[in-house]
Image (cartoon, rainbow, N blue to C red):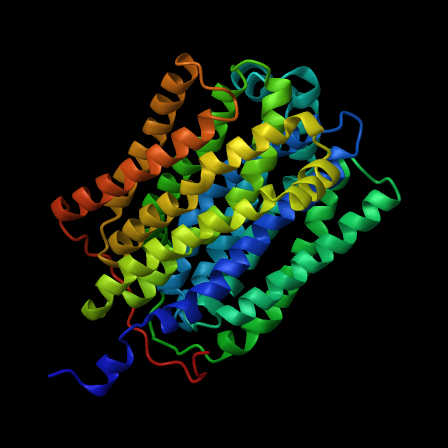
Length: 446
């Protein structure tokens, strides 16, 4: 017989939306900051080429940061007790130092040229823009890792609205700074990263203040999870996210070898920056599944919710191809030429399925995470990056343009990865990972 507490956990579209929408808005707002600072970069010497250079720098930076992605998931699992929170915070601190050092190594000129100029095949002016942005952004790796414990604490207590409020402040400051920087001609890739970093510092401070009452009220379990236990749990997620992060790098490498990269790459990166924002929002489906999947009655509605959310997130970016919005954003803000409009429209229509397929993949990842089947997640993400390479290769050799390769590869790879994760979940034995019990917190969940 189902008791009242079980019934209270039964999800509806309304309860799922109340949890997911702040997370999606937070992810969306975070991603929107990159197109905003791209406008600062585009007004520097080199014009729209700086957009592609900044995008390539962000791809490499995200690739390095993905090594710490699993630590975020581990924080949601182990950060429910005082001992677990402080252990997670300590790991986040040292991880930040390591990731910052890795980005600094990549910025050594010969290494940077090998990656940006030789492997990625960027034209010289685009390579220079990417290098400046990558070098300037070294401290961001440390900042991002230090805010992680505060953000996971808010997620654990379902205070997603508070987390979004901090991010909303970040995007507001980014908008104001972007306007000021462009007005006083502090432009180019260097100032674009500065425009990005200042609001991130603000967001981190606000997250710390908001999380502090929850941290003080965390229950004491009497047992501290070991560093090995937390890192073991996080490892498969981090390795898998490393594969995912490689996708932008690989697509860029193939697209740069398609005809007219100086024309197609700025268009592709301007459009994908919008769709990436909504695709990043779709990844929050995983956190939603982890939170609500435990009650078996929720599983069917979670699948429907993931599908509907992904579909909506794919349709919304199409508003930017409405003529007056297209002119404002792509031509005025991003400084693309009017001749690029047909490519902008085509690329946008091709990318419509990307958030939906990401939603399906992350639903499967959330299910596997809840069932403690990390190998299934790792298998799907390994297949994902393999399919990115294979699909991009065939698309390039079949004559796809630089703006077509990415949309094709992303949609196909997400679908295949989702299927592989589901298949792997059915085969993999549940892995027993020691997770400390969680006494109830003294602060109501909001």
